[in-house]
Image 1 (cartoon, protein in one colour):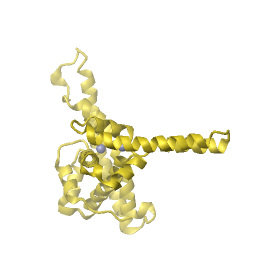
Image 2 (image 1 turned 30 degrees about the vertical axis):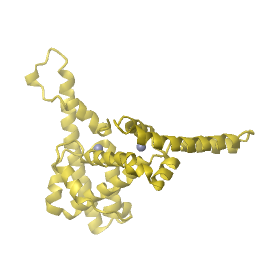
Image 3 (image 1 turned 180 degrees about the horizontal axis):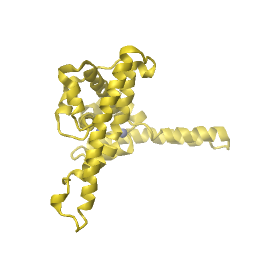
Image 4 (image 1 turned 90 degrees about the vertical axis):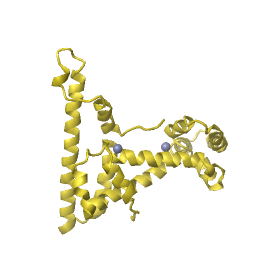
Length: 246
Ligand SMILES: [Zn+2]
Ligand SMILES: [Zn+2]
């Protein structure tokens, strides 16, 4: 698949001081989409049709609800999505009025699909793929010394590592189908450098978390412990990604 490059935001994210550049990129994209759905697009028929059909996930409905000053726009979206959801729910339940195992199973699947979609999550997923692609491209071409910047970064969180590895395999060696010559060398180098980057980051945080936990024990003195006030939050962010939502 072809992806567009997003060089400037990716470079900026790698220059910022964080435990995961993808978390920073995701935050900006997510804020942009939330603003979009509560902004003038609320009156655009195509936005309403999409939101009516797919809705948002629980996390995004909640986050949208916590944005101050946007209750009117949110109520417009919620009302038409609600009407659509109520209509579909009635149709599904009517369909299974008579006991029939197959119909019942498909109705349950249909009901579950009513809450599994989210237009913000879906757009974010596509956007993150472009960021992963850009990172792998900058690494492969070593554009403006990007490899060094990559290796010396504080790594990425576990939440984003899977997506990055998937994109690297897709881009560098066609999803592991083309493991000869240059592709094989690139893939091996990328994995090696990524492993070192992640090991450095995880080992450092592991040590800081251990010392942070010992700081509650009076037998240890602060001067003998190596941690910061941010160590605990940074360790958790490394596991799950940073949650920036209001
Ligand atoms: Zn992340
Ligand atoms: Zn969502």
